[in-house]
Length: 92
Image 1 (spheres, rainbow, N blue to C red):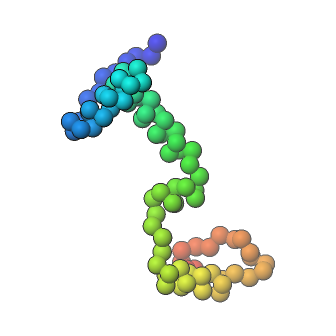
Image 2: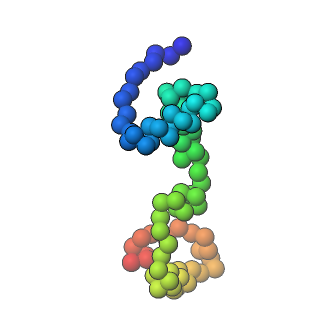
């Protein structure tokens, strides 16, 4: 078995009670719940695709900003370089 470490965490009374109640209902220890929840959260975060990451972490543009970017992109796009990466300098 791997070496076990102890860590302290700070929770509100309400958060603690919520976790304790869940653990009792599901027959898990507090440590087991926190450990598996943290590991699952990390795995989920690392496995999300770019679209999901952007959806969770980035806000949408204003319509006027999107139109401006679309106009610039049309000027930059030609048939021979369709799909090429563009630099930030080209957008600015």
